[in-house]
Every structure is written in C-alpha cells, then in structure tokens.
Image 1 (cartoon, rainbow, N blue to C red):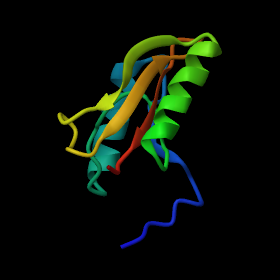
Image 2: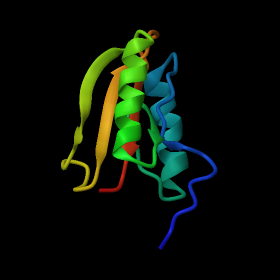
Image 3: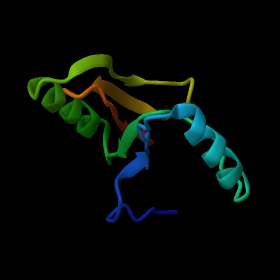
Length: 101
C-alpha cells in the first residue's frame, strides 16, 4: 500500500500549556472518549527518507538547535523508526522521523 504524504507532515505534536494538570484533566477524558490515549510530548515531522532525517538534523543544528538524539534507528518505537531529536532555540523538542528502511 502506498501512503499519500503530500498533505500534512506532522507525525505527532506536543502543546505547551500554562497549567499541565488542568490540561491533562480536560484532555484525557475528552480524547479517551474517541479512543485517543496520551502519548509523547513533542512535535515530530514525517519525512520520506533517512537522508531527510539527517538533513533536518544538520539544518536544525546550523540554525541554533541543541542536539538531543542524533539520527539513528530507534527500535524502542519500532524496527523501521529512524529519527533525530533537537531542542529549538525556544526549548521545543523537535523530531524528524522516517518510518521506512
């Protein structure tokens, strides 16, 4: 099956809030009602190739990001999960991920 990736490139997203406990108290039951569980806490973009992950990482560091995790396979997520993580200049955890070999 071929996946159309021409639209959104957001893979998953973290939203910062002023009162985390209040936000969790609101969102957990609302999202649970439609089958969505709380997951990770950052913004991730899906890219097409592992080279794109490496390009993202280099560009982010060149732009002033702080490295968190270099481009690598992360089998703790799944066997084909290739990603890189940085903190942007404002402290937001960003990731580029490729779900292909």
